[in-house]
Amino acid sequence: MAQPTLTVAPNRHIDIARLMEILNDQKARAMDVIAGSGTLSCQDGKLIIAGTEARLSPDGVTSCDGTYELNDIALGGIAEKLKIPGPYLRRMADENLPALDYNINTWLERDHRRFLVRCRRSANAAAGADGVTHAFLSDRFLRLDNLDVLLAALDGIRKAGVAVKVASCDLTDRRVYVRFISPEVQVMAPELLRNYRSPFDGRRGSDLPVIFGGFLLTNSETGFGKYSVAPFIRVEICKNGQTIDKGVLSRTHIGAKITDDDGIIDPSPQTLRKLLELITAQTIDAVRAYLDVDFVTRAVRDLEQAAGIVVSRPDETIKIVGKELKYTEEQQKEILAHFITGADLSAGGIMQAVTSFGRSVADADVAYRMETTATQALHLAARAATA
Image 1 (cartoon, rainbow, N blue to C red):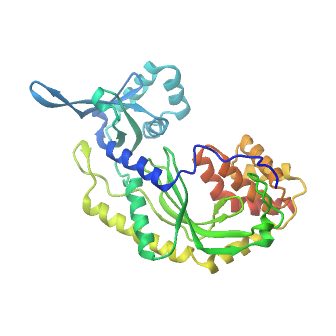
Image 2: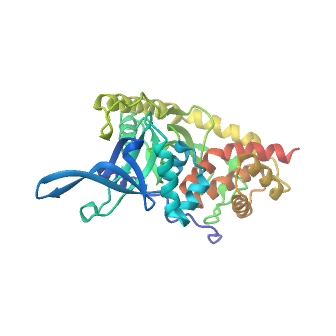
Image 3: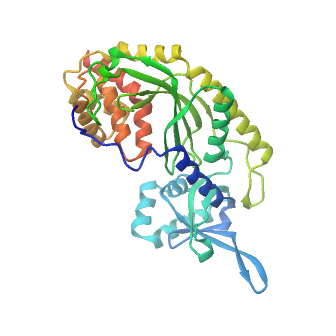
């Protein structure tokens, strides 16, 4: 057997137990604040929110202003809401904090809206450590937290009564990703995999031409898309996975405008319960629809129709695919390396290269982009190869 040639990102593909541990910690430290512009300011590059922290003094417990570092997601939210160019705002955050403070404070003074500011208190808050602002959003943003969504989805899986296991999980500042597969839903794909070789350990697809059916659950607490459940398949020989372009179930994070007074807020238990019940019901629907041998067989056969087309100029083809799908030049180079190592000189090989690059890249958000565009890459490569 050939020696491994490429590696899987070591910081990714965590198991469900570790994901739950992280999400429980984040939820315990979470704080959502509806804040008018008059209660917000920026000082030394950190967001100051009036009245969000408690201080113990001889006179008792009094409220005081909280200080929260601004991560990149929060900076992007401020840039969008205050209409400050994002690259300029990030440059000030890196190089000129007084200018950052001045710009944010000046535009806040002119703005009379309220915002949803999502923060996490520091694990060392008792020692006076600053928290973190991880999102700066509209006050219409519907808060579906990652932990609640995951628990509701797991409840749906249990109620559906289908054997499912968690293949891998990823968590970023933008989204949570949980990939489920069913050992009972497998399809043989000898035509799709006959020339493919795993870039991770050299095993050949012709020796194990198995594809498992499953689904991919995603959610964003910070404004980067809907909660969704999408059909997902995984190639067993290399553990590459991709979504299928049909039947995605989702829930948009926009709700009724929040009418609470300024300050720390908690979601309405009744509203949250109804939303989570919907997620549970949608997950049951997804499990029954996607974890079906006929569904996966049709999806694989659709891929096979374009996969066998020979790609004689892979570098040019990948450039065409990359331009259409907005892959960066560096990503295109990596995909070409995976294509060469995978040894499948066809449009199907381009698809596999996109998904194996997604499996190996350190950035889970980039990996998601690869998993959700691989099918498009296949059809674009086939079209370019026959043009």
